[in-house]
Image (cartoon, rainbow, N blue to C red; front, side, top):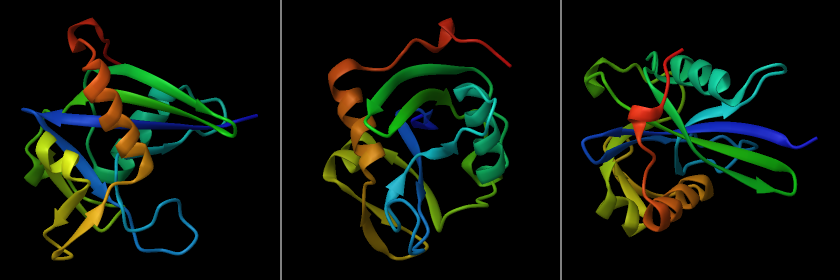
Length: 149
């Protein structure tokens, strides 16, 4: 069975909330900018996993979420959701990762994002690059068609 992962493109006014992954040997893509989310626990749907992970990682309860796309690879399935950030970034509590920022499309396209806490630029994780590529090709889903928990 494939590993299943749910992540969120959390948006606020054309900016995307990103997580700078920890510099820990053994984790997937350490030290790169990625999306908030994680693995599905047994019995969880992708949306349930996404909601749990976002609450665990930044202490925020997402409102409407919309499955944007799923990407199948030989040993994993990545479910990418689109979510509107309805809380000020200052109220979020980073509980996992080294930093978080709101980055605009030009910053994402540059392939490296500045980390205020680390005081250096770091590259994008492959999953974030995949989401950016999808955004450039397909656009975003309509959140008005999504649902609440």
